Image (cartoon, rainbow, N blue to C red; front, side, top):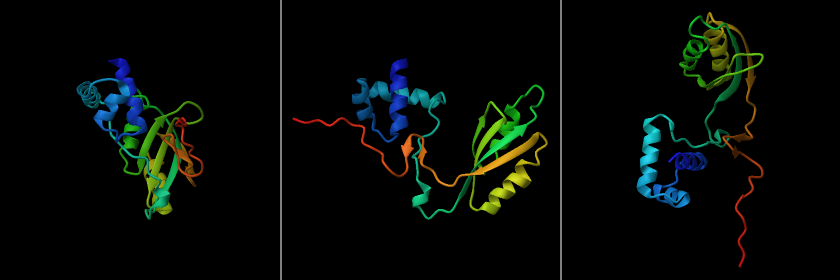
Length: 163
């Protein structure tokens, strides 16, 4: 069952819209077994959400994205977890990672305008008592995200079959 779980996770990560029937054919399992394993992984929190990868640059949506390096002072008996939880509750924060190296947390933040994003960093984030420093890096262009190439060559990886 463990192998089926891993196979399904890899397939769903590549394309979360695959129907159960196709997943069953691709894994060699029954449709019922596939449905049961996926349902179990959803209930256990292994699968949290099904989400497309979107190239927002090809839409009319205005937004500013940045990566923010954050240095913090860990809290006694709570470490970085309590600080990370406080930070990830802000609407502007899309992702939070605990890092090794020169800073402690890496945030992916998003706002409608540069002014809104600057306000978040200067008035909400940097004023937290545990935050000792930040460095903000604005995303200028995305080339690849979640394994998907946004522009340029995205060669077909299928083998050519000839008769």
